[in-house]
Amino acid sequence: MALEESNRCKKLPPGQTSISGLLRWGEDHPTIQGHLPKINLEEWVLNIEGEIKNPLKLCWKDLLELPKVESTSDFHCVEGWSVLGLEWEGVRFKAIVTLVQPNKDARFVTFECADRYTTSLMLKELMADDVILAHKLNGKLLEVGTGAPLRLVVPSKYAYKSAMWITKILFTAEKQIGYWESRGYSDTADVWRNDRFSK
Ligand SMILES: Nc1nc2c(c(=O)[nH]1)N[C@H]1C(S)=C(S)[C@@H](COP(=O)(O)O)O[C@H]1N2
Ligand SMILES: [Mo]
Image (spheres, helix red, strand yellow):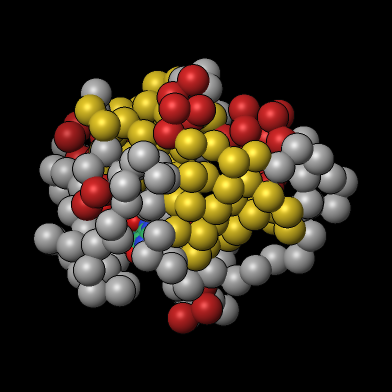
């Protein structure tokens, strides 16, 4: 096997092909609403609520004041494209968990978005160091087509878990099934197990 091919085998999960950059929603790909959400940063608020001791309402300025990390990771869409080596900057989800202090029975987290998209994950899966609430990509603020002002990044899951345009983070005891997860796509969505469809 050629060296280049063996490296590719290690980097790309099964069934994925690498492309050079992210799609821009609304231009390269239709949104679920047919148009991009209109978000005014002056009015933008991120609500964090549910089964937590310290509910938060963060405005853009509050968000900018939280400690940031840089994290390089690969991004895999269930339709078969991957973008390798994206440099995200944002707040580690783990840091948010420390701030809000979930109750004991908070096992799931639902993300609600400005386009009415939703997705959910187990809280324990969101504690990984590479799970970021990102406001920057490759050194620049996100564009609306890639999820501005704030999106989730969960590199080990198919990209439908990486919610763009987040407006609410809801901690719950019971799982709330997400938009694509209720339309035939896997809820576990593990990219290395080729785990694409609901069983
Ligand atoms: N709010 C919202 N988030 C979303 C989606 C969406 O339609 N709405 N699509 C998901 C899917 S299927 C993919 S592949 C990625 C696309 O992210 P990109 O713009 O960075 O390519 O966003 C995910 N997050
Ligand atoms: Mo996707």
